[in-house]
Image (cartoon, rainbow, N blue to C red; front, top):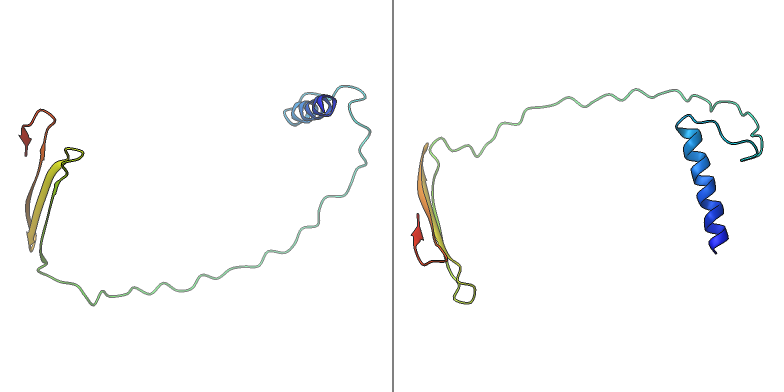
Length: 106
């Protein structure tokens, strides 16, 4: 097993040396027959489909929403809350949490 690994490592080292430009040591591998370059295949032109702009039917010029949550986990001590509301372009809200020392940060 160790011999197989050593042979494999030597082959990889030679291949890496040749790949980065170092000449291969003499007798590292037998002469390789020259083969013709692969045939070039004609490329097929791909035509992109026309892009059609879709008009959003559900556009609301005056969006309104209200959102809130509160977490109070006695097991982990996690205590935080958030509330947010929007009316048109005006968004208001707050986020608060209880620090490990017991103070509330808003």
